[in-house]
Length: 207
Image (cartoon, one colour):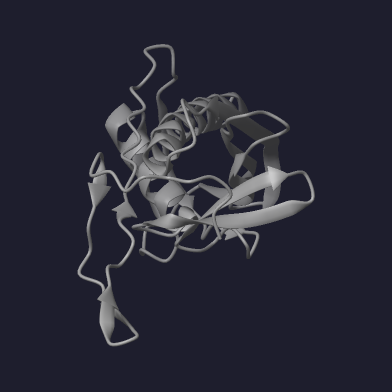
């Protein structure tokens, strides 16, 4: 169900070969798929850490771990857009973009998903609390992502550091492609803040 009319634009979309739905003898075109490509450039001030890190499977509230794009028109109401879907679930989207940012930074000996066979000194746990377009009383929404992160030292199984990250990027309008563009920026900010915090926490924890 959509709270704002949204034209079907071809901007920044990946159209998947989904089966068409039959409706009264005709065929309904599937909604376009959107695939944000977060680009978080490494910060020269990030420390280099001679260690390996694994990313645990992302924990995420059930309403958000869906291919449907969540929108909150009022504080008590959560809906989804009808004119577009994600190409990946938000949990996988966040994991993939974080891995890419860590790898591109070249600040660790290695980083990998948990279960990949990499023996790591540290493990990053992520709990996604919000991944939605939130109107918050305004005429246009903000692409809002809230993530709680915990950095664990594997040998001692203790929490070395914990922090909650909240970013909200304004959407230029109400169309779904505009919402996706704002999520692209929000995801880049989350990646940058999370990676910088993780590296700093690992560096200080080794002293």
